[in-house]
Image 1: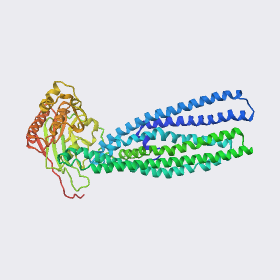
Image 2 (image 1 turned 135 degrees about the vertical axis):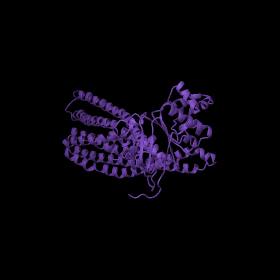
Image 3 (image 1 turned 120 degrees about the vertical axis):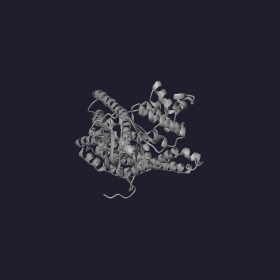
Image 4 (image 1 turned 135 degrees about the horizontal axis):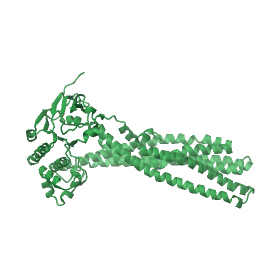
Length: 550
């Protein structure tokens, strides 16, 4: 990422406002820095030269105190707004990344991007705060204080200005060389953190299986090695940061000392006045200070810079499904037609589904049946506007699905995936409904009322991420209860009876029929006869696993 990436201004509105504030305060800081140096010189020089008494310059001291106070206020404003802007930008980028990752689709996530995206939005983006609070203000000061102070020095003494101009390039050159090394270490650290996060996520996801097989201790060494690698990469980054900071400090101090010695010798020789000499000696550190701080603070912000670059890479990913503009028709009465639908599987010579045609009638139960890998879930993804077909079309009330506005379509669809989304919280919070006759009737129909009755805290029972604390069948009943309570005109169920026993499967059948009786259109992906038997219409899905040529 560049010191100021345009993509940051494009994707984060709060960043633009903050940078405008920094430019304004940076210009004011430049004026105050110059005023401070000139006031000190104007106060001290006449008294030492004997041209004025202390009483005659007392008013300049009052002005100087005001300048000091204003600089403190500006510093406070920059840091306070910097923290707020950083938090807003980080939250905004997190929201955009999560939403865009969902829009890009599960196929992109399944290509190894899931865990890296999770690590990015949870931990890595927090490192962006030093960039806003420490690095960016100094970058703006480099573009304001440094050139304006140099112009003032040039007006006071051109020889000193030339000496400073000769010394200034040393700092950026070393900063670039050291910065490249630091950036590589920061990127390596981020990659190590993402590997560790990926391993932990995979381990937590499969911990139940590993424990059942008695292999829960197996990944210990792998996790320890990844943790040690991450710690080593972090220490390497800090090591380079400390050394580079010391090097930049030495260069800035040496450059300032050279100018001070040059001015001091000319003062002794009488070739420059005391006022000009004092002003130059005080302004010279202010010329180098922003450059020095940019180099030092770059290392503190390098991790966040590397993380934001990955954010922009994700946001630049092309969304496979483009939302149309036509409002969705009323799915309560609309017939959905599938015509010669083909979806090519990525990276394989397979089309699944292949040449699929069928009708989903309103207020009826339509089942998608076929062997594993035939494209049933893919068909549902196309219907949910999560995936674009390779060819063929789906229409609703005669309107092509690709021309329908995505949001208006989703507002009429309830989707229950194979693995229901259950977040940490109480059962009531996961249902999203108040206790009442509707919830009671829905839970009784799905059999979840018996589950709740057996729990000590009832609906206030807390469950973990993904439904930890509930069995597979209980999680499915919870999802079906939620679907009944918030059912929309079109309900899509992706293999709701998979991995369930006969009793749970019976509850699923009852729920599907209840949804139809309430007037909902139900599309269910099913393998088992119990679900297929209650369907009003069955569409058989098949795949073509042969190489297809155009």
